Length: 189
Length: 189
DNA sequence: TCAAATATGGGACAAATGTCCTTTTTTGGT
DNA sequence: ACCAAAAAAGGACATTTGTCCCATATTTGA
Image 1 (cartoon, rainbow over the protein chains, first blue to last red):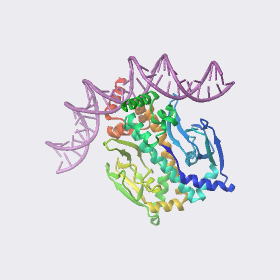
Image 2 (image 1 turned 90 degrees about the horizontal axis):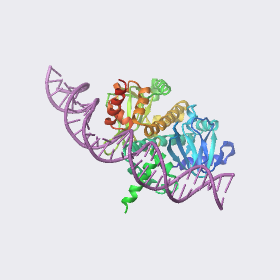
Image 3 (image 1 turned 120 degrees about the vertical axis):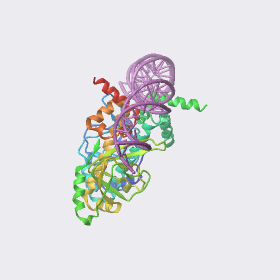
Image 4 (image 1 turned 45 degrees about the vertical axis):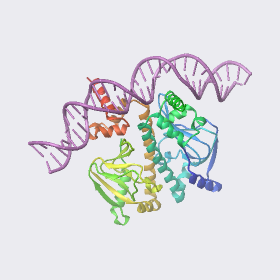
């Protein structure tokens, strides 16, 4: 559930060691906002350490968490390929350290560095691959099953993430989440 | 809702004219199955004409349509980047004509042809960009609103697609879809 | 350190959606 | 043209999930 990409992290770390490559870095505190939906930015981020959440909000204030990203995951990259504004807001869940790459440097790397190109291509493919079954499951199964599946891949989820985030990730209300948690507990007695 | 990619279509058509590029082509009848979930394939497809649906099925026979692809859209490409089997089944909705590119030729093009590389990269980015708000909306709004939104971008939907497909795309049952259609009609009198 | 803001927990009820079925209509193949 | 098979329509009921509250913890910042 919290996704990582060790290959990309290793590679970008190596690149960053050589100042000629113009790889920057930034840090953020927990809860700090990094990207806002509908705004334009001119750099992409690759997570060195920490976790962010990517989410969409609508006019009514509802928000839906797309994914949680961990080490080696990149964000802000979609905006390089089409000239459109950001689709997601991104904010730090924990304290965060990132590499940053300006759009122009990023494009240059894609064109000149075939290994880097492949890593990014694979990263995009992995994002697509990941989203497909997730949303499909979530609509097809009851909340309880979805929660159990989640807990299986991420057992500490309840202690690490606020209920509101879990609910937004699952596309439900906190009320419904609580109800299910309660039922599960009751059944264990 | 039925997505297209004119730039990619134009470019692949040009490449296909030169036999040296080893671009193949295949045709399928309506309803014919093209890819099956969990199987491995060694070529990718780019739609020349027609429409396909990409869908996931689960053990219980439920299926969830990810997207409908039209002219210029590619499928089967994810499997090139990670060595995994297909995530989606794909079948023809209408009569279909496609270009086909073997994995090895595809990889070679990506490495040697920067323009092609960019087109594919953008196509992947567009797939991600598209999926994000779709699933978010679908979980956050009532069926009626979702259906109206759908009809707005694709007015002929009811006449072109079977109800079952529409329902699978929306992640609901046909019963629920019918109910909503009925209510909408009633309100128009 | 204390007040204000934020997160959690849950009752009561309403609304949306699914399940199970049966009937009718449409479609495609011989 | 006819029949079997598939698709569409919808009744009756059950279940799930949301909405609206309010009460109680917990965290956080001046």
